[in-house]
Image (cartoon, rainbow, N blue to C red; front, side, top):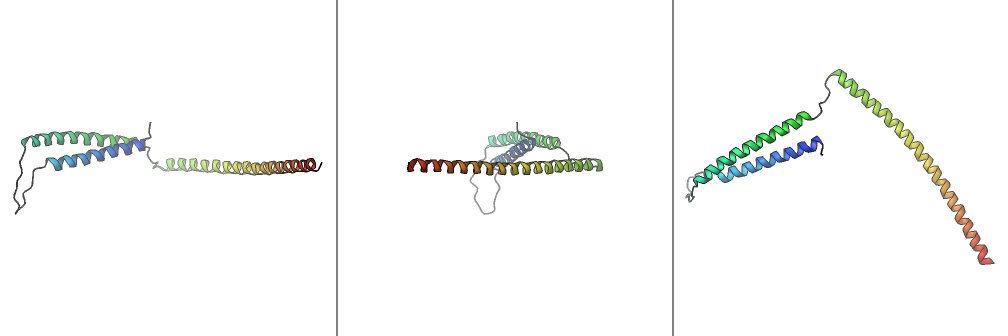
Length: 143
């Protein structure tokens, strides 16, 4: 399951979809406006008024429900410590993490040095082995 921030982003995107769709329905079902010097050749459909009211109610419900989900998800997010004790505890945890980081860095450096030393040893052995094989081949060819 996704984390809370991803859930929050998904619900905010859903809310944006509802708002855009509601705007589109409002635009589609709106009564025409009259302009001064233009002829008006439009037919009004009384069924469109009923459909517009139905859509208005539907989108109002969807937007309200989705907004409630956004609020619930925001409230479920962890809070930032605000008291001095909370800040001191957070600071102590950060110092502990920093100390663990220093220790892990030192261990990594030691391991890296050991790996480099072992690599040099392996390369030296391979070089000696290769040289010995070449010397043996020369002896065989000279015989």
